[in-house]
Amino acid sequence: MSFIEIRDLTVAYPQARSSNRLVALWEVNLSVGDGEFITVVGPSGCGKTTLLNAVAGLVPATAGEVLVDGKRVSGPGPERAVVFQEYALLPWRTAWDNIRFGLEMQPKLRDSANRRIREAIELVGLNGFERAYPRELSGGMRQRVGLARALVAEPKILLMDEPFAAVDAMTREVMQGELERIVAAAGRTVIFITHSIDEAILLGDRVVVATTRPGRVKEIVRVDLPRPRGDADVKGNPTFIRTREHVWELLRDEALIHARGEEAAAG
Amino acid sequence: MSASIPAAGQDAYRQLGVAPLELPAVRGGIAERVRERWGRLIVVAVEAAIFLALWEWLTIGSGLVNPVFLPPPSRVFTTLIELFTSGTIWPELQFSATTWTTGFGLAALVGVTLGLLMGAFEPVGRLLGPLAWSLYATPHISIRPMLVIWFGFGAAPIIALVFVSAIFPILLTTAAGVRTVDPVLLRAGEVFGGRWVDIQRKIVLPSTLPFVVTGLRLAIPTSLIGMLVGEILGSGQGIGAILALGTATFRVDQAISAIVILVATSLTLLRLFGALEHRLAPWRHGETRE
Image (tube, rainbow over all chains, first blue to last red):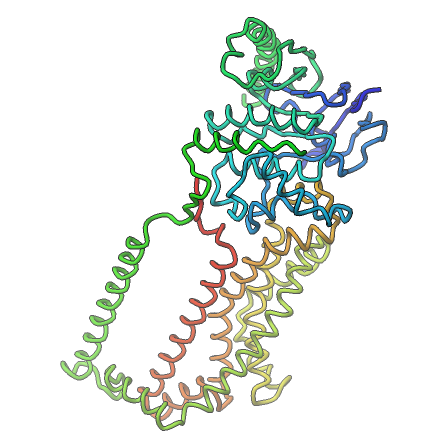
């Protein structure tokens, strides 16, 4: 059995002022191997974040289940950590203390805390910024803090929800390269949500293409590109271009359906 | 997680054009801020000078206004000095300070506690919220006569009035602060293993603290009004009594002196709490890099 098993996962939310429920995910099935880097790409509002939250244990499954290492997910756990799109750093804490937050609720790690924080800072390249507050850092640096906080307790699984969506294009490319290096060095299993096709192919061992709402798995695309892929040439590689075209075609149909849905809703 | 590749990190800084120790937190240079500050002070000083000159001229210079009804600022100034040097004002100031501090302190204690409970437990909020808002909307002065029946004369009814006029801004702002904690921070708290208590202590409380100070700041003018009304209406003590007595005996200069003292106190307290607010939550005041 795979490391993460998502079986017939359906998630529906109650809606305000309506007895109907909003179905965000519909019978999603996905198996993720140990150490695998999975990227999920899909139109906006397709339930990508819901999928991540369900694996994180923040959102309960309406039907179906998520298994991690054979155990059913019923809430958050120390073997899973999340990197948030909005960074979610505590503004009154320094970078160091924000990273500490990732392990301070685990009594077992108290003795090794300082060493672990030090290592996480080295790993993500935050040397010299330990005492900076989030407001003093650029978006890219803030997300490094978010990443270090997620890594500090050495979780087996890293769940990333469009972590680079809020940083500028330049920083984004730098961060993608860094992430590939960090994940390779730390050996984590990753589920990475994005709406960028390039990012999905650049980072993923497999790309999960999701359908428009309710979110389902449309197709899983294997990316046969050697690592590391962080250099600029990879985007000129024929395999990259072919994969990109394939994913784009899958998504175009979904985008059209979604746009029609929006029009209908607006009209 | 033993791999250390700080070189790659350093490269990233270079690409981003940011040196590791460059942390500009405040917009604008110090010189610029000093100049701006002095500029504002000069404007206020000129404004005050014109106002006082006009007032002086109206009463003494032109004879348009009888100085018995409205004494000139120079007269108010000497009366103010006299009140302090003769020592007559000290017991009254002490009385006012004690009653205000007691009432305000109690209101802060009860208000913050109830506010936190209202914010943290929805049923408590639903139960007390509408009640608190209704009482907040009630003119507190209206209960002054009844306070005599309940608490008699002396300091007690005034403390009660200060308490009532201070507690609602504190309580309502605190409750609002608890409710406006960034939900993504709460989610982060859950992800990293926080139990309910941890989340309250490490996330909800620190992010509510600046709201508490805001509530206290909002309660300063309202509580000073409460104190003044309490003292004017039949206490015979405190700064309000000087005001009442001065007016009753045609010593308008004394009444205005009392008002000057009150304004100075109110402004000082507001400044103090404003600075505290800024100190506690610099991230709420736009000092950011982006």
